Picture (cartoon, one colour):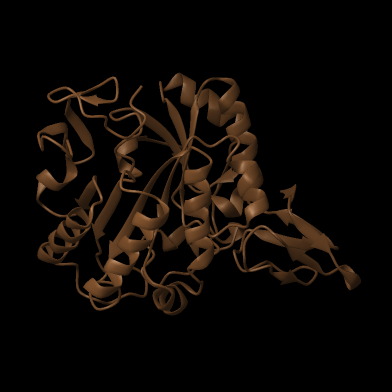
Length: 334
């Protein structure tokens, strides 16, 4: 364990965590909401440092998903137990909804993670699987070491973090995929959280000049209303622009969610709405149609990056331009 950053000591050995918008007030010997930070005798500790949930994994960057950030490259991926959201549909609930002592973890120092990335020819390290905010100290220390070695840092995050730690993190992060889950009602009822901090995080990442992509899991009857999706699209257009790649993905029952899987037709309808509204790069994932995973030039409409599953088959982006019509293509390609 390691003493936590971003907390305040109160009277009677009580502490207030200031890492995320929950501002948990934590009594001695108790955990915060995320199950990763514990008050021990009036000092707040990260109980997940430096312990990963399962072995380090080598993933294609497309699996994050990031489609416009070093396409075809490999990312060394890891996460820890705990999360500061409690989504009823969580696909990684076996690690996200437990305390570190309740599941198997493996001690892996930040230095070892960076060495593993170098050894396995990974161009980036991805902080993922659970919410990286809750293992902030672990992530930050690893990211600093990675940056010194020329390795990129990527977060796959729910975006539920306070501005001050976010600013510190963005000094070392190169790219992010943020879950934009739905409207405020969805966040309250399905995740036990609220929307505004997530929107502010996306805006901050964009303003900081870091590469941003967003993901929305479409769940039947919960966040598939086209009026609500149009409101989400309008937020993106007004605050993030037309170049932010957006991944709409199909849901399958998991954890406490019992809705039927997302029909492919719904996902394709959502994708079309986003494209027709002006978003240039829109993807539909977890469905049989491979065409919706490929990147198309927004001008000449030719396939630029052809993907089969998570793997790049062809890449016709040269010097961040379409090879056919020379239109600028948003992303980090080199």
